Length: 530
Image (cartoon, rainbow, N blue to C red; front, top):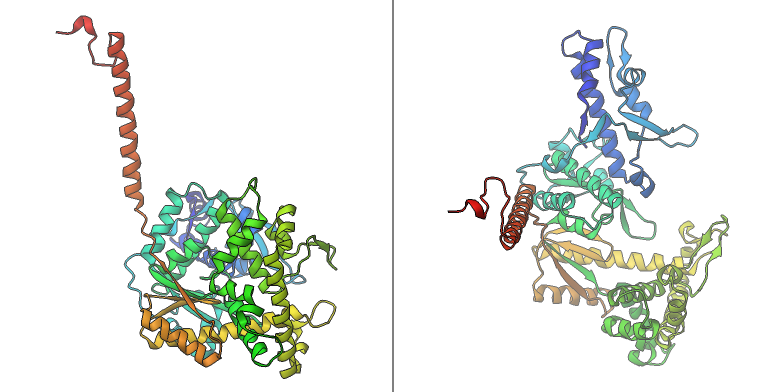
């Protein structure tokens, strides 16, 4: 993150400390450099909505003061001198302290602005890079951003902490230009948040020759998450811009496909009658023809006077069915939790309209789907906890009251199964000569399209290795963000302005001709015409 300072700051610092000749410039550069690192680190860690809305950053101001440099024969801290002379670069809105273990929340003063990072990275050749290569070739990686790089950690230890992702800088720059000059429908606060994420990604890419480093945050439930900015946390358009051209392959209806594997076991063991398309018909349709199922439920959930459009209705139905698949309860109203805060069940958050929520819950297809999920969920819970009694003793499985949660057990089992399957998918894709660019839970991002034979072979191996015939890959193409440059946009806007002005002039001329005179400067009226 690059800062632009009001020139008055260096002028007054130089006037106060004229000797040695360039001490003011060097001292201020050191202080500003540290502040830039701290701000970038705050962005990489991730800012919440409150911080974004009010332009706040969480940084250790004691470190800024202590390590920001000193100046003059009395070794005055630059941080203190700036504050004492009304030239502070930051304003503390919430002071941190050792008791709360929280750092201060600050915002920039009107003497400093964040520079546009769109021109920060030029001509970088991006090649696949390892954690070890990053450490050996880019030792100037900020200790504030990735402090472990400066420690005596092995390459494997660093790989356990971080995961680099290649950034398509041309695509990202195109997205930033579109965001800055053409994105008129994105709310201002949201646009600022996205722009800050873009700036941070480019800043890190500049240090690492075209890569952004994601800090791993593995979940006890089995999934790999990342702290702060990552391909998982940014919006879809920014992800597309970061990665450039790519294909995204995900497991179609993954949680329900996983459950169907257990449904087959139940039928095979005689616990429930078969066949599958009779006993678990709705669950099977969800995997085989989800769109048809969603349209049926939508027909009985929404009325003609619904305020949401067709696409919005389908998304809500899909979210609700997915939530049920993950164990969402059928509570129709909220409740007060132990902390005194009101809690809303998943369906209340999805269907804000009480009538629509009521019709959804009472729909015959939905009721059948729920009933089937309950049967499968009970079988999974009973079978897996019988195999591994220690499972329900895990701390992450317990509720606030200390009892094991059935929903958490199912989530734990599913996410571990999902991770195992996706590891297999990534391994097989790499073996087939494709580069894996990133992962998002049940999806993998690949540099090129998989051939039909390759995809079919991967699906076959998945079914063979897991014993579940319902794992299927669905691919979607994503193109690089190729927005026109700001100069072309400016030219187009200027051209449109000229056309508008010439049109106005022509209309005025036509009007004057009808009236029998023309009063434009330098023109003649009818009385002076030859």
